[in-house]
Length: 227
Image 1 (cartoon, rainbow, N blue to C red):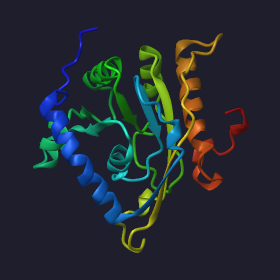
Image 2 (cartoon, helix red, strand yellow):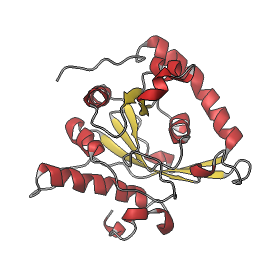
Image 3 (cartoon, rainbow, N blue to C red):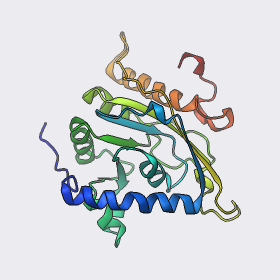
Image 4 (cartoon, one colour):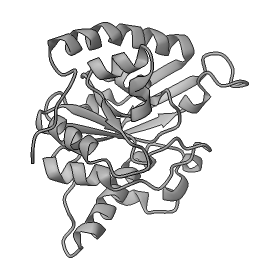
């Protein structure tokens, strides 16, 4: 496979990202009271897929701003043409993606980042959960894990939907909890398509175990005790 271009990955992008981190953390502290749990689970080296539920447009800032390693994530392609914000996501090497359709260029760039031992933040549900309940996830994240051998780190977000929302109060409490990392394995006896679905479900169940039952959505009635 031809290696994708990794814009914003060199020294200028790294410097800008380093400068932005304290700004992001200050913004987080201004808009919410946040607790970070089980950070001892975070692998300090190697390719990493941070797999998270998705409650708010603020989630990428929240996770990337608090994560101890530099993190890359997908952002809808339209953002890259916005003033200031577009320049920032371009120069820090974030991945533009066409939402709602297969995007081979975004996939190739994600594979390249993981092969370069980078952490990549993904929201497998593909959209914000309007009712704070988990939605059915897409299988692209499972394919990335299998193709690269990356470790998967479950991330559970609680309360981020209330950030900057009318009636939610000033600085609502938000929780970011990391689960135990694992490396997915394609189950024996399944077709590749079935295997990807099985691995995706496994990832989402790892997140669901970290959430209260009322936030597990489509994964609420599945056997979490096996996780």
